[in-house]
Length: 151
Image 1 (tube, rainbow, N blue to C red):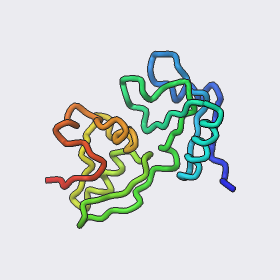
Image 2: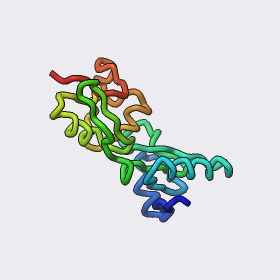
Image 3: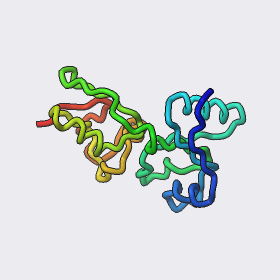
């Protein structure tokens, strides 16, 4: 049996996850603690034809972080670095980690996650990978879901 993950549908929690002027607000907000939580929410919503919106830091300016859907906010609990392998130049991290935190962990190994958004301390890894670009320089950095050597 799954441990229940936090789910909120109050006016305040819904408004907090609305960051554009469209007026759209989520149906509710889920803060999954594990991939099993994510799978359970997605399955539940799919069976009932309820839209699901996975979300990182919500820093997009184009509105793709807001919709009338159940929002999965990964930044509360699924925000860790799982492994760093400096020799392979590879890190494994959860989608909710902020890029600033990821890069702080990678810095001692002379590694950095390539995309460089203006709001790196608020942009989440999942959003960076999901949108394939997170800054005006992302095309030059070859934005890809693995760290690159610095220097």
